[in-house]
Structures are given as structure tokens and as C-alpha cells.
Length: 358
Image (cartoon, rainbow, N blue to C red; front, side):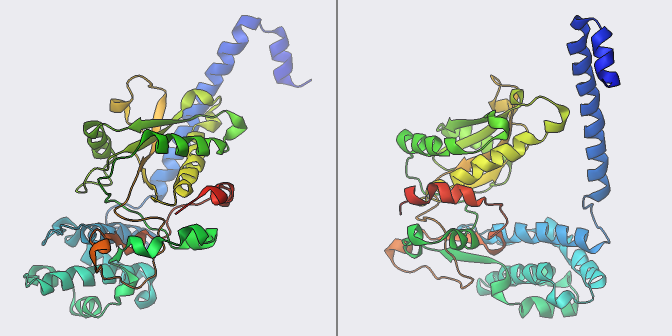
């Protein structure tokens, strides 16, 4: 018998549960503090000097340019805050990586900048201010950058008609994030079908913490997306599924992050569920309590929007498509670097493979 069992044997029973709960609370604060210190040591601060941290911020800023390029209503002159920081970071990356010319992040950034500049030049817009921020060599690299490395691409519904016949590997390799959606209404039957099919998602000890909130009210959708912040400037979709995790399903401090991983499995099920529409999963900040006053124990993991414009499951090559013809009038423009940055679980596809239709 160990000392814990001995202590419990002699301790008054009414005290055992409160003391165990107190111990878990202490562990929670200790573990959270240790996690915060680890993150504080590692995250990429403003104007870093270490290569990986520089790459992180370069990717972040370059992606802002790509997102601006993906808007149908492109705003010329966008990105002054980006340009105030990105040129210096590119210089630091050149210093931190002697082989910077072959650095993937560096090349993607130059490609995004190339398309941005070219779009302004084609519209006869002045870019002398942007040019003044870069060194002569950097500007030459930007103007000569390969467009296939970054920037935006256009996709068409007609390119996606064979998605039901593609393998899991092909679907995963060619997916992209979508932020602009058609105005077609989404029926509750379709939503319920998706939710029912996703019920097979595994969860820790089968405790089923995942909750799905169907949002059809346009004002509430707009508020949710404003809090999430990742689709600012894009039209709101006609329907939104907000996936949350009920923290009451977890029992110890060691499970404090379990909600994220469990709901991520649900996210993958939804992602492969509707080949016809390609659900776009938009990760949220850990709290949307403004929209969850009735369930304060929940925290938001991700938002799911439906119906990208005229698109089914994405199958995009690195070749730019120029939209032509009436079927392509709603072609979606996407940031190139959004291709394969989401974790996909094979079991989600294997379970749903036979139920996906185009």
C-alpha cells in the first residue's frame, strides 16, 4: 500500500473529494503557467533575428497580401502596414539563411509581392512608394519571381466535377481554403445530414464533448465572423456551423487542451463530408461567449461555413486558371499558400468515402 492510499484510509471521507479537486486546481494553474512560459520562450516576436521566427512573420505578412489578392473587389494600395515591416524581415531572412534564394518562405513571399505589384502596374497605379522600401536586389527578385510559388489562383466549378472519384491523397493534396461563398440558401436537411454523418467522429474515452451550433441569422453570422477575425472584408456566408467543446466532459488538468484535439477530429469529418460544397473550416479564438451566454462551459474551436462560390471539392494544380464562360463567372480566387496547411485524418475520408457524391 503506497502512502496516498494510507492517507486516504485514515482521512475523513467527506474531505477526500474536496482535497482531490483542490489538487487538480493547483495542477491546472501550475501546468498552465508552465505552458505559458514555454510559449513565451518560443513564439515569434516582432522583428526577430532567428531564422524560423523570421520565416513565421514573413509567412504571416505575405499571406495578408495573398488574402487581399483573393478578393474579387481588390483594393489598390492595400497593405501599408505590411510593407512597413515585410522588407526589413526579408533582409533579415537573407542574413539568417545563406541559401535564401531557395528558401520556400522567401520564394512564396516574393511571388505574392510580384502579383501585387503586377496587378498595380497593369492598372497603371503608382507603386513608387512600395519600390522605395526594398533594396535594388530585392526589387529585381520580386519583379522576376515565379508566379507559381505564391500569390493567388482562380478555380472553377467545372474543374471539380470528378472529385467523387479522387483518392484521399488527391483530395488532401489539392485542397485550398475558401473565404467567398455563393448566396444559395442552405437547407436544414443538408445540415442535419452532415451532423449525423459526423457523429462517428472519435472522442476521448467516448465522452462526446463536441457540440454543433447552426447559425442561419445573418446578423449573428456577421458577429461571429467579426469575433473570429479571419474573414474580414469577405461577404458573410448564408449559413454557419459553430463547433464548440463542452469543458464539462473533461476531468483533470491534464485534459485542459483535449477539447481542441477532439473537436479537430469532428472538423475533419465535416471537411470531407460534403464533396459537393467543400466546407471551409475557420478556426476561432478560444472564446465566443458573446454568442454562447447560455453555455458558458463551452469554448469555440472552429467555425464552419458552407458553399464556396460554384466550387465542389478543390482539385487545384499550381497552374493559374483564367475564368472564362458563364459557368466560370463566379470563379473563386484563392491565396496560393493556403493549399495544404490543415491536418487531415485518413479515417474521416475512409468512413465517408462511399457517401460522398459530386
